[in-house]
Image 1 (cartoon, rainbow, N blue to C red):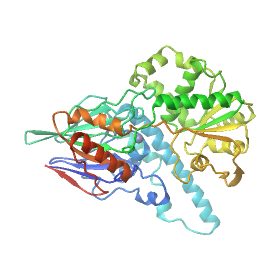
Image 2: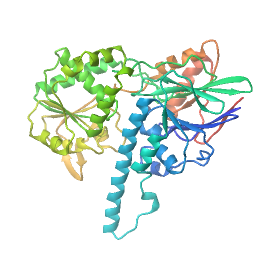
Image 3: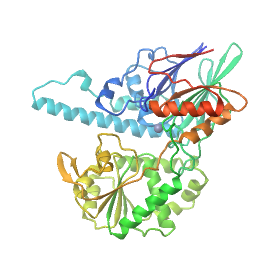
Image 4: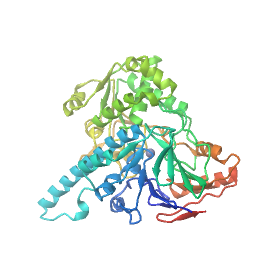
Length: 469
Ligand SMILES: [Zn+2]
């Protein structure tokens, strides 16, 4: 018997963590952080059934915080077992977890200062979940596995990592479970990318499965085509440059930033925009971009050629890396047109906030939103057309021109999820479990899968165990 229990991302998109119990082993696939509002902080704990001594191994699909963010907590708790993942995911996770530890540490110090001023004491709940040492230990426990290699991960269980095309190093994982001369295959999709992403290979479906645990982030819709989105992006940049504008692109450090640079390079190569200065103003994004070049062997054909023959570097001759705060500040002295790509992606922290403070009231500034903006974030206020926004504690009128591009996504849409599943349904009907989606997308994807394959997917709640014979 196999038992599968989600401890996160059940009817929501963050906190991915699934316990898999076989007759001979107990495994955890992903152990991510809940992200969003304050209430989520309290949910970032290791649930009782994921007990450090009873877990044989953890398997990690990719390095996003909502998939790996509780790992250092588990290690701090005393988990000493292996964490299997791809080499690139280990390196991505290191950047992301270190950043998370630093943010928690500085938030904590800020709260401490505030409490001291008010003569209060902080509760234990205010302490950081983990620190840099915990992250370092977590990274040491990672055992790297290349794509498409079968590896033993626990008694009676072997695993294969397949390209998921979502971010650098991302994988879907097949678990082969051997018991009493019988073999069962459980496939975890992880986050599945769309086709035709810059640099990344397209996602690959495993060829067989008895049970499939599938993400459903965009289970309710298909995205606009990437070509149409790039076209819109190009015309925004063209007209902003024509107005000699200062162009600010808030961007997530890993994945989206590299994609934005890729499209800007393409515009320059085809003569669609002139060579203007492009500032990459984010130490984390600079580190992540460096990592991309180290893993160029994982790129698709087009991406590897562009890197190998120096074309991309030549297109991006005007790219300047602003590592230090001083370099970042000096951007203020430039006259437009120029482009700044800076974090954080939702304008909630990081250097983009300083740029927005200096430019939000400037009608010659352009803010180009290229990613998801959560409710409550400064980025969301701009997308929603706020006339005044609070930046670093002061209110400013929004006079900069705000452009919103909805089409870039690192997730497959509904039809692509169904296509990803199709090879595993061919000649054999697996059982399907839907996770990593809010209730509506999850329900709509379930209906579509039922229509296509006559399979009724299961949609467990947090902590609800599903048993499979
Ligand atoms: Zn992800």
